[in-house]
Length: 203
Image (cartoon, rainbow, N blue to C red; front, side):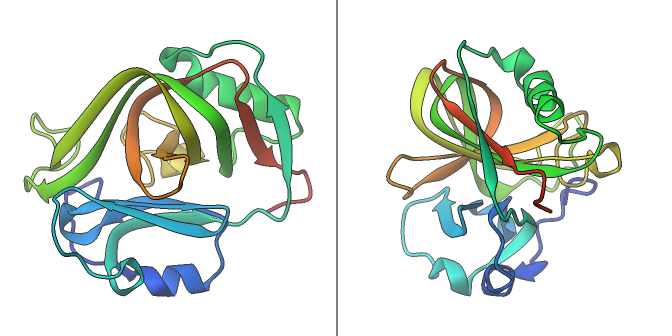
């Protein structure tokens, strides 16, 4: 999908959920919406209003998942700016016994800051990295927003495959009631938010 802008169905969402992932991020096939798994729960948001399939009966063009047996909590005592978010996650991981050169899931609970997020509506037939976006989207911007984050921080060999090119993290925002989600293009974290990283025994 990232390489060619191919939003055709690659996996049934129900099949992915049956494997029991803790965290997952991806896109609905046909560039129709965003998929998030947080704490094992599925959250899907569609870009256009109207009738849609039951999410577990739909398909994904991209869905990257991970399982975590136990979390360790890191309390964030300062605001983290968007340009610092990936180094912050990598540094926190390193400080808590996780090698950031390997892929790992993460969550955050509290509030995001200075964010830009989107939900796909339809494909543009363009590959990521071209002069046009891969999808037509609904974009939302703001200074602060409560909610959770689910994401994957990936090794170099998965950059541009699981993530957008040049990025280590693929992250989604989830509403406090877990009824809506969106892809985070740019985001920071507010002080007081809790970052969850895998316990050292997790895989």
